[in-house]
Length: 116
Length: 155
Image 1 (cartoon, rainbow over the protein chains, first blue to last red):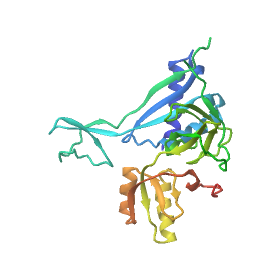
Image 2: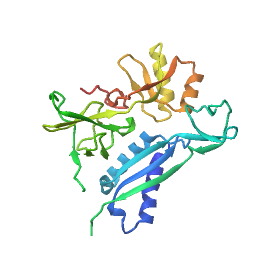
Image 3: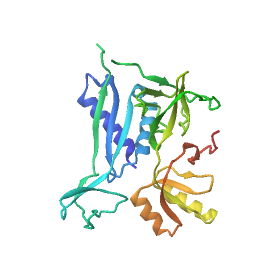
Image 4: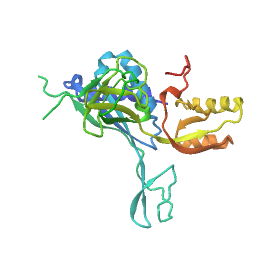
């Protein structure tokens, strides 16, 4: 439920990181793990609201990629996907050793090419 | 070689025949239907840039592009959903109140089921309420999403 401030922070971070290239950004991809408590629809809606406030952002696509939860099983020394929050490996061993799923990160940025 | 994407500003009229054309799908997640801008490739490799001129969400099956050879349709990917089967109008209200507190969209199907994208914490919360429910793979149709204002079915 903090998606509006998250989206604002994303674009503030990009403005600070790319002060000279910010206006050439065409796409921002965010990866959100299923344990990050982020609702992609709320991120998208927050971005659409931000565009109304800052129309220059309308030229940017914001894409949210949901990352599945991956845990590590010590018994068989393998990673497995946690489906529907069942933290149990295929071998039957429970595991709370999370390898992926808690992330919330800017994973990719695309810039307009061939612009002087 | 770079090729310009097909630019789509709105869905085309649905009453157009597609006979003889190659049909390709522009696949999106359910939560992307309201995006004003998105660029993806169809499964056939055609680059499509959606730049919507209106706020209305796209709908599963929308015709995005039509030429003599090619038709591109929108496909909303199915996802895990919590599907609830309310036994009374009061239960509908209670369910929508609980889900609404999470600020996530609620969908009501033609069969009066209440659907919401699966979320483990929400599922556990609803389980505690003793509602009749299950987890199913469904397509969440924007037209079935209930809104705070101006609820109406889109044709």
